Image (tube, one colour):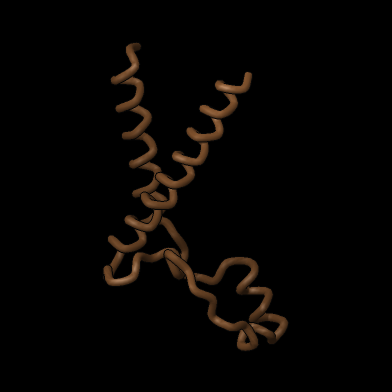
Length: 92
């Protein structure tokens, strides 16, 4: 398999997983939030600034916001991994 088809196939699989994950995401609180609620200190938390608060993109309504946030997050992770791999190749 040449490089372009392999890259296109990888991108398609990643995109499919992100889209599926966005629609399968739970609206229930995650483990840390649930524990804070159960132990009664959830209201003591101070809001902190975030780039993608609550896994959404500010200014975009609906499920598309979650999908876009997932794509942005996956893209950042991929860029960081590619950077680390490039550094490892250069030094090794």
